[in-house]
Image (cartoon, rainbow, N blue to C red; front, side, top):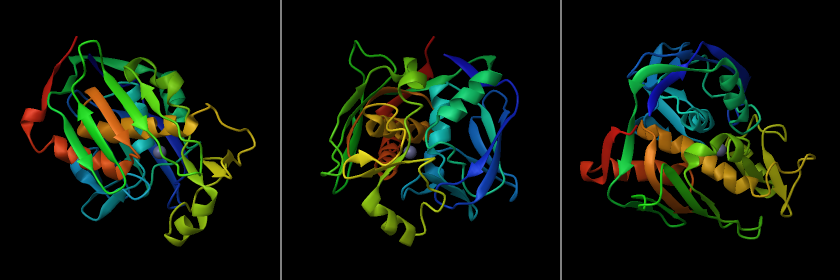
Length: 285
Ligand SMILES: [Zn+2]
């Protein structure tokens, strides 16, 4: 696979879902082998988008270094992964990536408008060679080698919304080909009765029906309804794609999970990188 950056700088502004602060970000083209990295321009701190820079996973994936944080990186990283961009500098002037419409649609569409730059170099992929699993008291996730007839990243999730919404399973095969249409538009979601708890935890200060689906009595409160019948599960796939991109590579393999979230996926990456026998980093053409 070719190596890509973006054609020219592109900016986004908006409120952060959890912090409620207004933030400006500018994505800039980056040279070959620079990877994806955040530049907190107000603090002059560079934070590579890497699994071992994750400092918390409570309701979002948050990176940190030297007491400086960038919160809620998963939707932007999901957009970059879905578009196969592997070199990009993300300049950010505050603590949290704007939530925009709650999905990665706006990032994807605006980046597609300016276009990608083919960097005349091959990008490495990470292929799963041995199964790895992370399990906690409520759920699990595993990364498995692809079967012979499978290509790219395959995601297979089982849900359990415990009467709050109808349970749905989702199976996405070779996600690389259908990210933009099938996944990027799926918005983040929450349950009405949990809103007071989240607010008491100093979370979702920037949340509204403009950037999240809110489910009450198993139905969305949002006037426009859902963008896909199984939008909640598709958003979980969107999150998995973003969280897995913190591996630093596009993954070739199968991700399988039950009640997955940022905590489970980050710990799964930590398991993966415990042994070099679990994976192979190489180029595919
Ligand atoms: Zn999300």
